[in-house]
Length: 417
Image 1: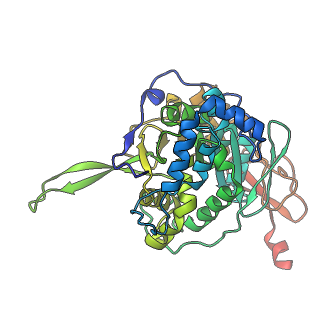
Image 2: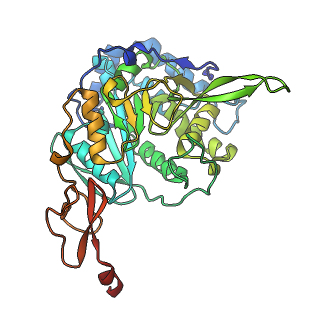
Image 3: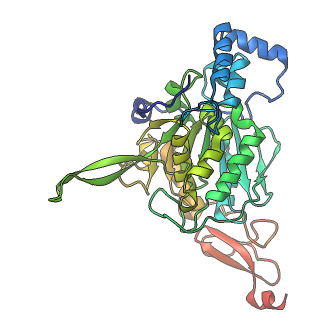
């Protein structure tokens, strides 16, 4: 049967530590196989990727899978992998990219706040086809439907509407639990539900949740995940931070430090099998875990552990300034799949350029931002401390930061509305 592996795996660090890094490749924005692929194509793919033994094994495994509600004699931690078993039964051990070219296929998404620096960041990332937009497939979720720009094929890119606006009650806000004092676990629960129902997660080997302010390099992540990709691997998710904790050994106060692996939500990575388990059995997590006191990343980690997913540990995957006990890193070392946090447009692209070895644009040459809260079209005002174009009548140019500005309604005008 399929059972959880108790020992976490340590990722091969050669991919992240050597100086030979893959360059940003020309990845299609939506290169996963279509959900309604023709039968003839499925047969060809099956002949190339697997034999009848794999198909038979997958079908037998499907018959042995235990129900998530515990019926049928199921043991705690058993995985329900309906979605991924269906893929295996078609004859392929992974995504189309993996079966046909041996390439790791990533599906990536970000959740953003409309009319914010997050929206500005993802628009700029989309313009350059970098960050999540360099993945094989991508989506952006938001409370509002927003037009973000154009994909490489010229098609318009809009956000997927995530209607969840509620907050879980205030709880544990220690490092790794949340990025703000108000926990956003409900919003991300809904985002996962939307993406899983949409179905694109099954077209790729791994799904990545990246915060907009994470400087993310998909080619580096593909390189690190390659040794752990394929249908023979168990349901897997990544832990990307180590926290140092004091362990007291005796009553006299003596003890030692130990390092505990954590999941920090700036970059979360899940295999298709692990999301298959989440799809079929996440109700167990909602019923069994005190998630209302957690952030989204802590909830996902505890849920994955409850469902029996394998932990894959890599402390060099992310350069996260919040994870102070990870090996030190900077954008210039070009060894990480991501760096966090860089919330302002200029700071984000400065880090990206440094990591790619591109000369950094001086501050006085920064291209003006394009977002605003009230003014349409975007870019009605801006510049490093000065207005380049006037705001509409009854609006003024507000500088939220040196490199982000927006036209806001004058107070007197707002009172008269």
